[in-house]
Length: 249
View 1 (cartoon, rainbow, N blue to C red):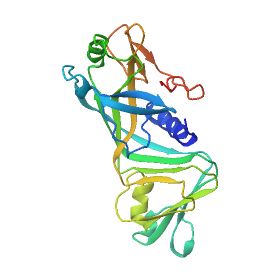
View 2 (cartoon, rainbow, N blue to C red):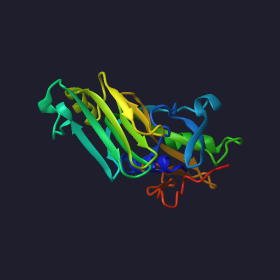
View 3 (cartoon, one colour):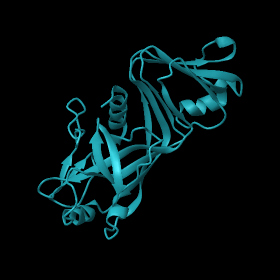
View 4 (cartoon, helix red, strand yellow):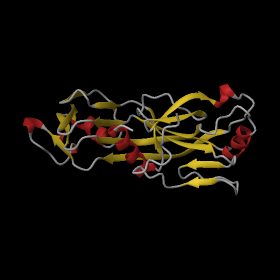
């Protein structure tokens, strides 16, 4: 697992107790996707709707969430007129200003989304039992049981230490961006080409997964709750051991 992807996984786990969708926002993951881990990153190879049209998936909205994470060692500066720092953008109105992030450590990131919409599989138990009856189902596969879609996200991922990233816009827009609602006209500048950013875009930032174990019991890779008594729930997917993130092939 790359250092940057691992840092993002830790951030998502801390904030909402789920797995990272990597790359964030730009991926095409959806509920019912199945696949495996490669280099610690989930790779989808198909969707249950296409592979098994007879399996009914009850997908419904879940409770909204938020993301607000900044890596330790990151310095955030609000810069107003004349290059002077300020404590708040509110007092600057629509004057031009800048929001600067200075990353002191490698694999640092900022992840903010004021609104994270959840879509989740309501009948995991029924789907799992149906998969257990399929002779060609591979138990190595994990299935996406929920997706977390961040709206108008602010995501900055800095691979190299001593990187900086600056967003320039009117102060009122920067105030919204800093709060996790990136909308409006802005410009960006980065000191390193290796920095990844997604600002103002909406997309999947996190997922929940389940799989069948060797005894056809359902194993949840997260904090989901089910109704069946024989479901094994793995609440603590410790990233130091990367249990549950091992390569499958």
